[in-house]
Amino acid sequence: MLEAPSLGVRTLDVGRRQSNRECGTGVLHVDTSAQSVADGLRALLAMGPPERDNPYFRPESARRIATVLDSIELDAALISKQYEDPLAATDSMDDEVGRKWPVSV
Image 1 (cartoon, rainbow, N blue to C red):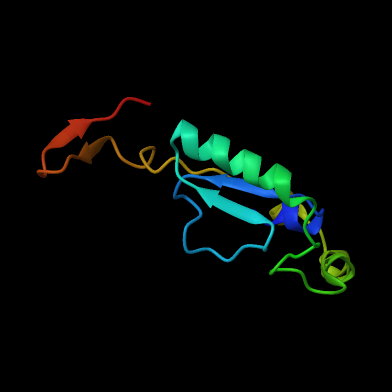
Image 2: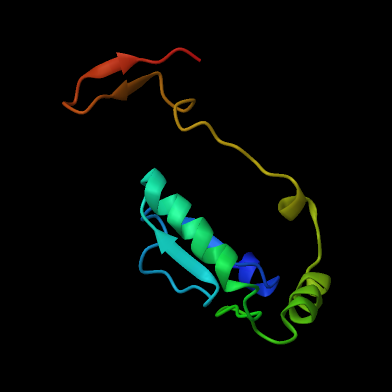
């Protein structure tokens, strides 16, 4: 939903997942029925290419992001992801009614 308007590509948004989210003018919203999708595709094809309209576009974003990333020192704490198993510290766990169950690791 965000990238397509920047590329000047019309987009068919099928379903409700993106409802109430800001989007470019080249996005057409339809429900999930086969007829709505078919009608939506025909409508998109008839419209021609949209303007490059991305509501989230900010000038110089890539340069600003690169500058920030370049200023961060990449040490072991940032490069290595540590995982801690929350069950490893205990030999039992409570269920939703408070019963204790053994945990095998």
